Amino acid sequence: SMDEISWNLARNLTIEYSFEDDTAALLGAQAVDQKYLIVGARARSAERGNPDVRSYSFVYDYQEDIVVQRFAGKPQSVSVAVLDDGSQMLLGSGSQASLTGAPNLLYDVTYEDDTMITGRTKELKKIVTGRRNLKTKNTNLEKQHKKYEIRQRKHADIEENMNNSKGSKKDMQSKGSKKDVHPKGSKSPTKSKAGKESRKNLSLKVADTQHARGTPLDFTTFDSHDSTPVSSKEYFVVPGPGYTKTRQVLAFQVDGYDVDFVLEVNSAQTCNIYYREKKNEFATKVLPLPGSEGYLDNVDFNDVLARAGDAFDIDGTLYVIISLFNGNNTVYSFSTDVFDN
Image 1 (spheres, rainbow, N blue to C red):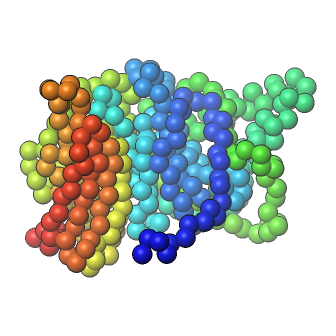
Image 2 (image 1 turned 180 degrees about the horizontal axis):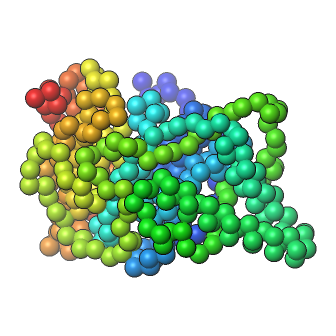
Image 3 (image 1 turned 45 degrees about the vertical axis):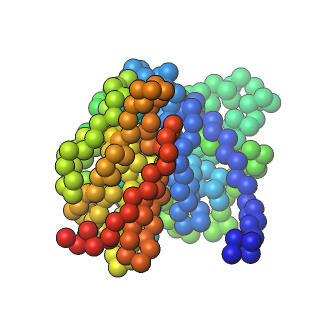
């Protein structure tokens, strides 16, 4: 029973986000290998229409106290889902009914030799140490610090374009910014006792096979958009590429299937369940949830929109709960046999 469950705080990890890009909030995080956090980020809505807005999601090594990768600087990312025993990661983006959508990109979770990113890690650690000592160091250190920040921003934009085959050249020319993340009050990272022994570091790469067939790899400009709810007209079909206003991506399992399913919760767009027959394949079936796109309440003049969801399988019946803003929660249920037909 619930009375017998005892909860204990294992660790309180407070992240001070000191990237001086346009990030206003960190939304969505998943732990991988008891070592990394993959964290989504978004900018303020007030930044809409600014073609240079950047809000980088990132991979944070909380054992080494360092950011090892930044990625996806353009979209409003709000959710992270780790799939298939940690072999892939799905980044949910778009965020709001009144903003332009963005593709939900699938990334392969890979591991690079330590020597491949040693330079990047050392430079990032220099930023941490430099920032903590700026108040006591002279202006020469501050000048060196600023010069490095410009170089690091260029590196991040190059990395984003390498991961995004359709990225524009403008990404390479965006303004400089200061980068790093570290827990408050922590000591500066120290060298590993492993010395020169080779280590593996998590690295995300845009997957060759995306979750939905035809998914574009480039992101739209963050801007205003019509917030009127739009419903799906067809069911049990693979959708065309399009841009979603996703609030959440959730990986879940169904008995009898080897790969993870994905619940995609959208704002002012129909929420969907994605089914793949095998790993590293496109979704072969998509189940839109009727009415989950929300509606406009003409009585109270409120927008009723999906915000979050959950899914679980009980004895061959799949239950999906969609939580609505300004409305009652909705529960869907159907036999899991539908994915075999």
